Image (cartoon, rainbow, N blue to C red; front, side, top):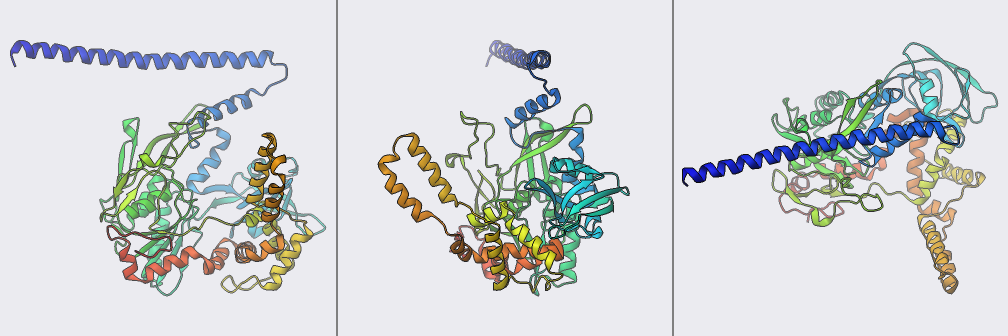
Amino acid sequence: MTKYKMKKLGILISAILVITFVFTSLTRDEKLFQIDKNLDIYYSLVRELNLFYVDEINPEKLIRTSMDDMLESLDPYTTYIPESEMEDFRFMTTGEYAGIGALISKHDSTVIIAEPYEGFPAQKAGLKAGDILLEVDGKNTKKMSTEDVSNMLKGPANEKVKVEIQRPGEKRSMEFDITREKIQIDPVPYYGMLDQTTGYIRLSNFTADCGKRVKEIFLELKEKQGAKSLVLDLRSNPGGLLNEAVNVVNLFVPKGEEVVSTRGKVKQWDKVYTATEEPVDTVMPIAVLVNRGSASASEIVAGALQDLDRAVIVGSRTFGKGLVQTTRELSYKSSLKVTTAKYYIPSGRCIQALDYSHRNEDGSVGTVPDSLISEFTTKKGRKVYDGGGIIPDIKIDLDRISSLSINLINDFMYFDFATLYANTNKSIPAPEAFEVTPEMYNEFKNFLKERNFTYKSDTENELDKLIETAKEEKYYDIAQSEFDNLRARVKHELDKDLEQFKDEAKDILTDEIVSRYYYQKGAIKATIRSDRGIEKAKEVLSKPSAFSAVFKPGTIVSMNGKPM
């Protein structure tokens, strides 16, 4: 190439760079102009509404609604957190707050104690699940939301709060003076030995320092109780802090191993997280239990251990949240929790299930289509896939329960029966020995009849919708007899359903009743006996050949968990 041509090429490249810079600057300036312009319009709009709207408006509520709707159009995880909600947000990340230590819930028109936490002020003072909160510090709760009541129960540690309750079955109300304490919820509600060689840890949240807690428990199970294998239960764990997920994985993989990486629009969010500490065990067989409720940090742990061929994943497909949030401070002590990146587990896959960046015309969000799902490989060459959650190595449907139980839960039938039972029976056997007897189950059936409990199955509800559509489209009259026959065939009978789903109902009753006497730990201990997920995990861990077969490239695991 001649000097003339090189000079000409240089001038052309310089021109392109200048044009690109100018275009980029114009685009950036145009964006800023659009923001300023629309904020000015928005301010004018709110001002005019406040001055001229026919009825009085609540400007704060109106603006908050518009902010929430705006952020919801992006994704459900990008949210505005006002100063009044910062305490709840800190509790989600730290598991710590100051209050009486109880979960409350709305039951019909009342606010009730749903669960007093063992060892904390509410339980020590004598509050029980099912107690109706009538007043808090002299204020009637009848027209209050659970959020309002919760805010009154919380407050500075070592200060008293007066609570008046009505206990079902008692004629008189009862008053309690409860001293608030600093409440730290243990992220591990239960751990122990499933048999002589299998340890078990249930991790419910990835709050601050949960990695240290899991480490302490694991070493105790291994060194003091003789665990030779481990079941790590992440079912219904919604996630939490990303760095704590890395810390948990670090316990079981070599130092320096990549656990997860994040990539976003802004380069500062591009980061690779590796195991920075020496592990505690890299060889013990591990089974990780997951279900549809396992999300975010839970999926990082399950996905990383799967990609690194360190653990067998057992259960049903996880939620599919592959988005990372960062908290940004705003004015007036408020904050913005904003999605800043996507995370990628060691194989390179992102497991985000819903594509919020490409919404349908009606605003709904679709899953990643099969045509865009990509194949990846684990450390040992097994095939894994992106596009929506972690697919277990051994698949068991652990999520589905009958329409009967869903309605019994939603109508508080299990809860109310357990409340009645606990208020009329001073004690029950130990969690490991307790069982719902045939006599007790008959009491439950009679209880439902006394409460006039009725429900419709999902099939019946869908048939109702179909009939409504048929009527709107003028097809119902010509097919009425067929619809009537179909309705008769799918109509459920309560007594028949209570018998058909008896085992399921007994399991839920066991959980509710045992928790009244032995709290969360006791309830978990009682239900472990009939837990299909735990049984499958124990089975694969007890057979070295079955465990190792999962990690062989090309192995396909069937729905019943047997390598093919």
